[in-house]
Image (cartoon, rainbow, N blue to C red; front, side, top):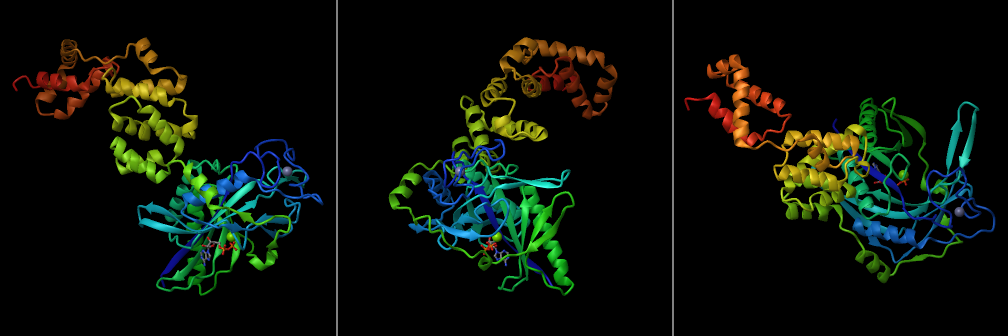
Length: 479
Ligand code: ADP
Ligand code: MG
Ligand code: ZN
């Protein structure tokens, strides 16, 4: 029997507010444990939560960017459970009446093409604290700095069918939240985390099968790998004639497998009820309009604009707009250039290649957008050759020096004086009589050997557009 995977994703995104969702404590990352706490976020008796307006504005922005309908009235509930990182014994979350519902996200994958993934709802909630386990002393400590940091949870419909679609959905959502500046998207620090729900059903059947929920997925790669593992595992279970157990499983990135963590709890286990300390949240049309008016350009719109303004291919535009900072880098870089397509190529290959190799993101680029633009300008004006531009780029990346200064200091300007090139070609041919004879006997592949010799002598400075015809005519004197 053939099975079809059904996947739904829950994303928790930490909102970039300066203070927590129900108190004035800072949300700054990296302070001493428990430094960012007060009686409200540590759940002392008698305190009252006060909702952070900025957090609501950010949630509205996220809702608009994902085409959700925003509720005029939503509510906060208490989700009751015990855990040492949850001092109140309950988490304040929106359950029955979330701030936004019925959105969607457009994705595209190579295998399954363009698709529309439904968003069930977005709700606001507070984060819990963190336990730090010390295996040496056999103790655990609790850090409540994260307790009360505002989150939105974005719940997708079970519309996803492949690991690649899950990856595309997450990358798109991640890009959008960064574009609208509501979440820093740092997956290692947990500002953007994903739980994946997976089930299988016989192909053609409408009813969903039993799902498992995967946690601990802190990179896009892990999500895709974990989902694939879980599809394979469930397929095996079903093929054995057994049933999938509804449970929460943990991704083990070192073992490349998922491990059963606990039986899946049901909503009624949490004894949800409306938080009596908080009034209903009212979002009127004025507030929504105000947020909508300040909405920045979204990835899709930027991609379309890049294609029309700069005549970029869909492929290049997609790469350059996937991250808002990369898009900004590109636009700064090409401000004074006319050969924009060339600069786009260099960014997508040479620059991104270097950043990937060094594990840096674009904001950490050792070469600034302005300097990169200057380098592209030197190439565009034929001041330097492409080969030299590569060398200059490498030096810029290492020393941070200005490209014009590097070119001047090392005398790297392109040699495009025809007479100079002609005498250079004469020298090279005189130095390599055997190869010249072989070439003239039909070994035309040697052309690149001569080209290489000339580039070697000039350290890549000779203009290939001039060298090529000169070399051609001197190697084929009868023509
Ligand atoms: P909970 O909060 O208990 O995890 P929800 O009903 O909110 O439960 O669902 C969470 C996620 O699970 C959603 O993204 C939804 O699309 C997905 N989901 C629900 N049922 C299935 C299923 N049978 N297979 C795969 N995903 C599912
Ligand atoms: Mg869940
Ligand atoms: Zn506090």
